[in-house]
Image (tube, rainbow, N blue to C red; front, side, top):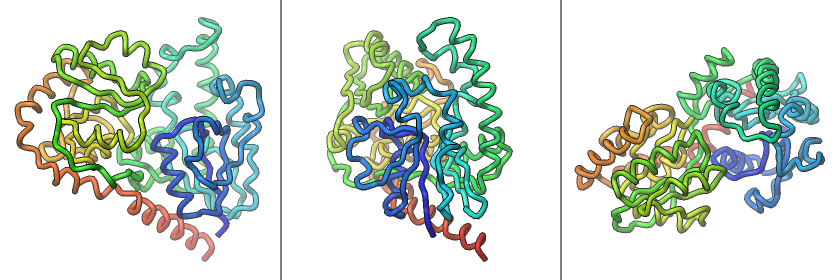
Length: 368
């Protein structure tokens, strides 16, 4: 079984990239095809993985301004030559699913979400996007996005089997692509969280991007005058620091040991966004830390109300603040070991077994 891996692009390390790393451990000889690869941002995360890039890699300033080439990405992903492979496994929240698979091969797409800026976030994407060129670019962009939506549905129709990273995403795949999917939860690092006493602070671990809604947490903790540690960086960092009061601490990107120590010592983990799955929330539970999460998206599948955390229903700072107050009053009632135990079902080992079994079963069905 000659396997090729495909991923949208490699310019950050997050949950999707950890999925690819888990695949590399299963199929170590399989090359990875991607639109562009920024070694400075990825470093040696993938070890000896053989990474093959599209023609976009060689275009001017592609690594620094990948969005400039949005309109070329369908052609670039389709130009990747996968003709010698029996099995193609794509990791996609955008273009990866659009590779052209040869007639004899099997294409399994692990879908993190149907492309957000084409579907679920289409109405807010243009307004939130900061692009050079001002109003003219923003007037032309909807036309490009409309064309990309047509291509995206066509690309989805070429996939043999979809695997979704949550029931929430499976629903989106059905809505936007009219395709069924099998749910396999992504791998989460559940190991080596220290057993330490809980502090009096709360914590967020997130990329600082608009849809992550970190501003809601900052406004809530400003009003509550409670300590909140924010792990991560991103395009919203400068704006968020301007609205943060004295009880808010930004750590930036930190190493895994320090991140695990902060998660383990926190009184609670704040999860104000709607996530497709929500790996950071599960990492907090692996540390024995209960989660206060907005009650939509993947959090409804991972957070057990009253056992591993609590959900708030309105995505506002007022609703979050009310949930934190109620949480603080009952903070002595959480069973931290039970929370740790709950997170074990999302391990990398479980993910590897399930995805390998699924791919091999579908491949055997094809050749027999």
